Length: 415
Ligand SMILES: Cc1cc2nc3c(=O)[nH]c(=O)nc-3n(C[C@H](O)[C@H](O)[C@H](O)COP(=O)(O)OP(=O)(O)OC[C@H]3O[C@@H](n4cnc5c(N)ncnc54)[C@H](O)[C@@H]3O)c2cc1C
Image (cartoon, rainbow, N blue to C red; front, side, top):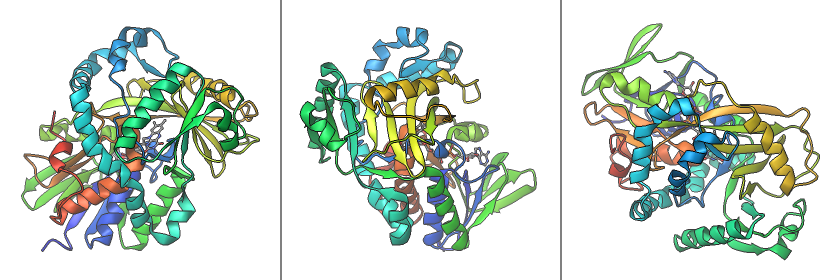
């Protein structure tokens, strides 16, 4: 019998939580493991956008041409710590292979249904009471200072438009009507009308965790030391308290996931792409919707309690000392777009690791050798967006339903 199977989920970030709740609703017995508070790691500090418009991979091939300068510049939107480079080279090589025009088009075909259905799957999961409490749908505005960047953005928007993503090109003279707090004289913008934002990512995790518990799910505040597949129907979770047997295990431990799987003879490819945020608790202004600083490549998101400046990419070991200048600099860059922005003095800084894959698609599915161990990580820039979608895919696999996309394209062992 499928229903009633006992399943362990490793990791209570937003991805693990969404999976745990989905499977509980499907009638499985579910235990979630995490030594940390639910949603307190990468899932806490993100830019809070449900990127329904992201039908093309976030990373661009042009990065490869810029590699030598990325190694020199510590303050650009994208940087690589020199010490981290040798470990990163195999990932970079796979990234290059997956960034040809042809591969990007193929990847978009998979990403498109995942992104475009993401909010409707979130609404299903959170339900009619919690959805309006945690999400708002006012669109996402990309703002550009330079003609060159605006021109490139229009091209990008037209590709997404062909995928069915709604958008509007906002000319220079209309920018202030849309967002009165913006500085005058910007070149223009792109408004992705349907994009949704979360009002407080940490609160969303708490809510999903609460729904999971009240539906009868079990939470164990323990680190998983290892995963021991026994046979087709049994896989053991090992913690400091001993071993517990389950019928299936789902690994959703974010950046830690690959290391956890290594003793099983597989190491799904992810790189630690760190990001930063600067949380302004007293910004002294409000915004109609989140804004992407087109050239700076970070997001200015109005949250329930303040404004968050979040983004940038720094390929570095997850435990490396953060370079807090990267977070601090976001304030000056945001002020170039929003001159009234305030609150730098008591702002708080945050750094966290994205688990980025070379093709920008997550690792979702069973391991080839150990069929009762499943992966649900590698969401990179899009884990908040895709958490409920991945939960649906995992549920489809377990219940043998036709998934939203060809699941082979997300195989953790595809590289
Ligand atoms: C600056 C920044 C901005 C971002 N903005 C956005 C955005 O706007 N929209 C979007 O969709 N995405 C965004 N992201 C990405 C998003 O935050 C992540 O993809 C997402 O949070 C990943 O969730 P997760 O549950 O996989 O990982 P995590 O939140 O890191 O959770 C993993 C959990 O696993 C636990 N764990 C690890 N090892 C073990 C173990 N051995 N045993 C038990 N538990 C373990 C950890 O304690 C942790 O709680 C952003 C990321 C960054 C850094």
